[in-house]
Image 1: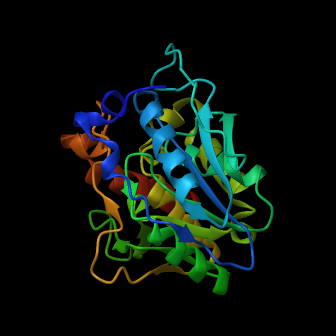
Image 2 (image 1 turned 45 degrees about the vertical axis):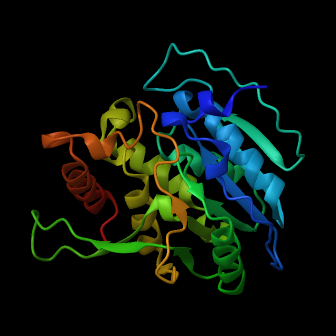
Image 3 (image 1 turned 30 degrees about the vertical axis):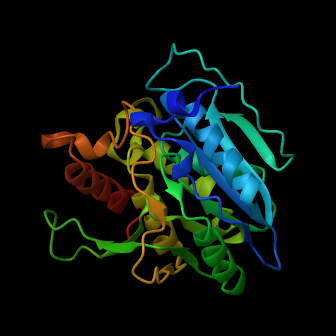
Length: 271
């Protein structure tokens, strides 16, 4: 057993977790998928355990953990945990950067809905029920509690707005709509250059890549009404790598990263 105070950043205790009992009612099974980084592994296990203890109606909750992290290639991982719920899958996989929370799961899930979540947020559990049940009714669309328009204004006036789902606010999709994503993404990496992909801007902005894909194939990305409330407790874990991109300045800032990724995507997959 490990101490909550030792596993949560800034001494956050277990009372920060939402322990409401929630039942997701859908016609099709619901899968939740996520990834994490080494410094947040123990926190992530505790968040997962809390979700499984309190949410009914989840088919599987999948945690994708790379065999080797590109940013921490020599780090040894402690994967011990106390989760006994059979719905939990610890899936070892390749490192795809932030897309690791989603891409490896596609080979594990049949034609059902997927909810993508972040590992550093303590979510209000009723949010999972709301977005999953909407997704179940409207399978030809994808959803998030926050979707914004992004346009690389520094390029040219003809650029199109891309609807980008914000990962912290949950992203849902139906597997049939993303069945070609692995090929699409593999082609993107090939065109960018596999050797330098881990230094390419698109490696860091998975939300933008996901939004671009859906717009490219013509699947609407729809914002769910959050009814003027937060769907998570922000900054659930303030580990050393928390919101790393948001803290960067100059050429490596989030804005510049998104602009550069926009330019690369528009050349390879013009809208």
